[in-house]
Image (cartoon, rainbow, N blue to C red; front, top):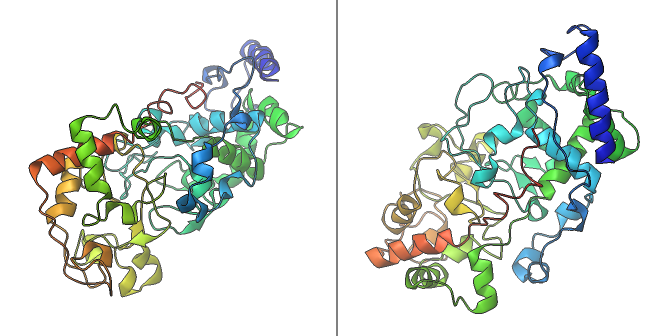
Length: 380
């Protein structure tokens, strides 16, 4: 099917070049002769054959989060369409920004900038997180305001500071491009382009970004025989009781579906971003943000919702020594570790070796496969 797409695209592009179509003839295109065409393999990548390892499927921690990411299913043609959509700047109002502009593959689909730049070149006020393992994520965005990828993927496209596209005009714009009708036909059986199908294509591609091939995962299989002394010390620090790192970052995915107040500020709203508190108005939600997965953490700097920390060492130092008292600080960050929120924050006072070891261990969670996988890369 994809080979037919390529032939169809080439034929139609040649027609466009020799007939000199105007912008009026191709609504939504700035210049039809300059539209980049996706380069796709003759045989689609086997997105539908991929899955999580048995160890993940049997992980009791992950069982708590269900398997929501597999409900819609993934087809090779559907994820191929989603890959093109994800990396295509034509989905933005001025044809300059794609989803992949801010979610960069080499950074585990995060952005190394503190605030990503959309079509207005106004930095976003929250850091762009990495994208992977959506099977286990129900609520999305830093403030968890959206339930399900199906309700999330179009929001950045329509956001005026991000991709700025008028969503009602998007189907006609994509249908006018020479390569989309055949891609939609391969995915859905006919060439109709609509928002529901755009959503489904993007969702299928995003659900195909699965990260479970790190040095840590290899260590689970060989009893960490290849870990350095620093990495072994860091693993011990991470999982031991007093640091409580693994009480918030749980399971094989090193995350939680809970949102925590972690003591970055005394008053988050006054500092500029109250997180969930900005939505609910509740004092108990001031500064409550999503608990991000630590997988690929070595690839996704800077850190925290606002990107305030540029290195993992800064993050470790913060949790060791600098947590700010907050009336609703999560109890796991207190000396007691249990009981009501808002207690005095603990002072771990980790040694230099422990700090460096913890940083070294966190780097073992990086998956160098997804950052180079051609099935996930830009086809343009």
